[in-house]
Amino acid sequence: MSASGDDVLPRRGGWFVAAAEAVGDLNHPFYDEERRRDVWNEASAVGLQLMLWLALATATGMVWLGGAAALPYASTLLGVVGVAAAVTLAYAHRLGVRIEDPAGLLRLRLVPYVALLIAFLVGVLRVAPSHGFFAGFAQGMVGGSAVALLWMLVSGVRARRRQRSRTV
Image 1: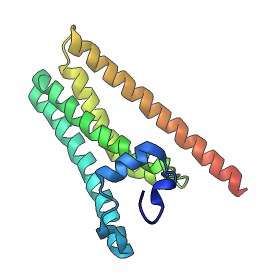
Image 2: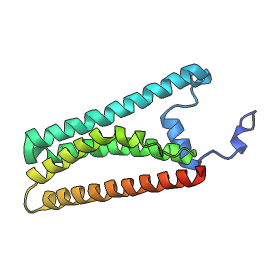
Image 3: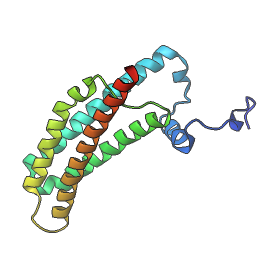
Image 4: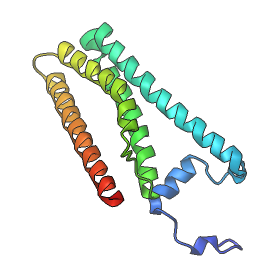
């Protein structure tokens, strides 16, 4: 137990937040100064967005240029980046920050990203074998992506309605 009694206090967000803070080394003295912490957080957000764009563009290029042989590698690339993005969103969610933008700017900015994702999925369908594991995998990936995009659209509309009803 530390002299300050910190060990007695419950962790905010539970084990997940504690693990994320350990991975991110968020207790480092670097984060003690507010401006430096804010700039680093903004830089990390830029880096995450760039990583998402580059990974999706790379995976799309891999599928269109490399064909069926590139499908496992492109899928793995998107899977790894997807896990990083999901952990980022889960961390924010655990600490009470919701990613909802009722003004619609966030969704408008995502249109090119969705277009790139659709190009990837069309490429997957184009190169996927007609039978076997990768045929089912490709169909499941495309179907799951369509369901996820629909869910995000419905969630966005619902968030916008809730926001409007609160302001009226």
